[in-house]
Length: 172
Image 1 (spheres, rainbow, N blue to C red):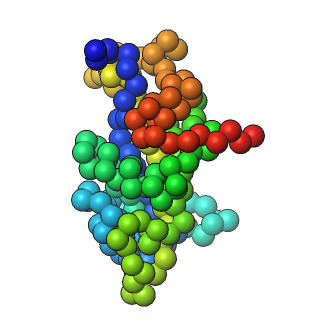
Image 2: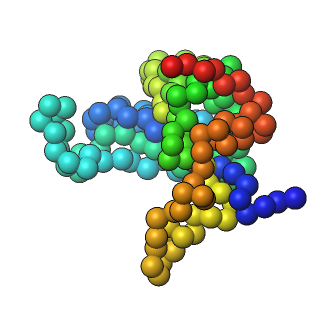
């Protein structure tokens, strides 16, 4: 039976940060087009940083947000790359699970292309309750999500074990 308090995946976001605009950014965009059917979006710097050498508004990377069947397909492939293992510290208290993939050629069917090079990526899985987050996103009088509706780390871990058959490794 489906309940409004069930934990579900809201979205999966794949991010490739390259740190500069130009040819590298276009290559990262082509990698995301190879792996997903989503349309890559350019991410820009929010503020100027002299230490890192970028200005506000400068393109720094690309990302794709997936939902529905495409999200499920990509997540299964990405977990296969990680040998269906998750680290316990990758689950946050705010309702997300993050992990990195060092090289896009680790995915099934992907071969190294010297024109593209090697690109790694960050994958963020965002969880929600089936019916509880409208409170924070509604147009009239939005409110913080109450504690009883927030998703706990243990619930996210159980969801991943049950639905994606992953092993969760307890690491410090």
